[in-house]
Length: 417
Image (cartoon, rainbow, N blue to C red; front, side):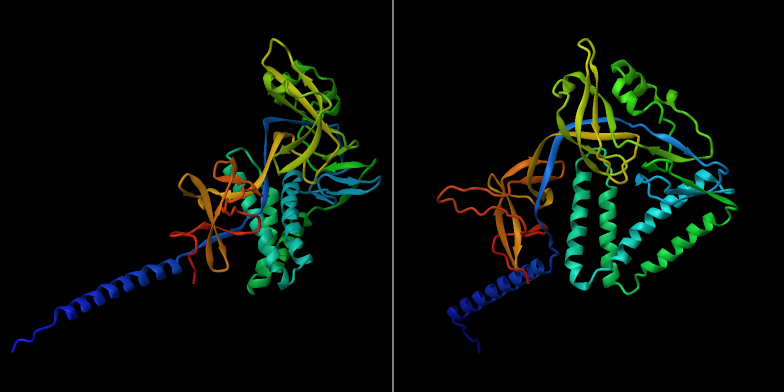
């Protein structure tokens, strides 16, 4: 007997099956959205500096310092660039050992020991872990921003900041992280390098000043007097043939002393660029060789020739940051600054013709508009506070919001599980 099925029942079953399929499809895609990895950063203001990039040389008066009896291994007792008083002990020089090799090795070991001791001497509490992560994040994005700029850079200051923060976090969160063991091994290595030194003598400062552990042979040619007196042709000859002016020192030389804090930075510049600078003007100069230093300097001399395209500019300062002692430097003369919220390119989206980003507030994705004021190689700066007209209900990105820099399927109102 053939059973007759009402058409309405078939229709209802068909609708139910379709609804079930739609529900299953939705559950699958919603669950995949929730399981997706979302990357976020807390955004804040940063400053982009615009200016003229140059390469030049540090000029400064310096006097080589010699040991009287020995020229073996050297153990320095003060930091490179440290200000010392009369009769302060500068170094211990041993009878035996390789002067240059031991000094270089001990210098590298001392730098790493100082970094590690920064973690152990000021051991943080668990309550500080949020601040440590913020510090690590800040250093990381500073490094990323510099890398994205595409210019010649040196990021050692941010690298050290990042390393100290990560070491501190590991000390609090990883039971197997034994920083004291590494400290002990480095200390033992340092002692072994200096162990077979034989007899020794102490080298003391005869006058107060700044002691530097390295000499490069250019102390005579790149002096403060030269910076004040050379003409344009003299500077260019020195820049073009600097190796002809290098001097060799006796092996007993342990370093040099600068008795005046005044120093100079001289560089070649295109004549049309040099014309915009006037003697006596002050600028921030951002140095990027052997570290990252921004130093306030004054234009001491601008040397131009109406018939020549090569000009020379000389800056002067008495500001001496720790660790700043490289002879040749790349730098940027800051002529303008732009301040805004740093937004990686990966976080930027479009809504029609407008640029937008997404933030995470609690577990809810929210859309934010942005007003781009600067575009870098791989990032943007957007205005911190945007004034809107009456009736404009757009909400713009603000500092301290949690910006989504990685994620798919983002939309305003999406809830993350």
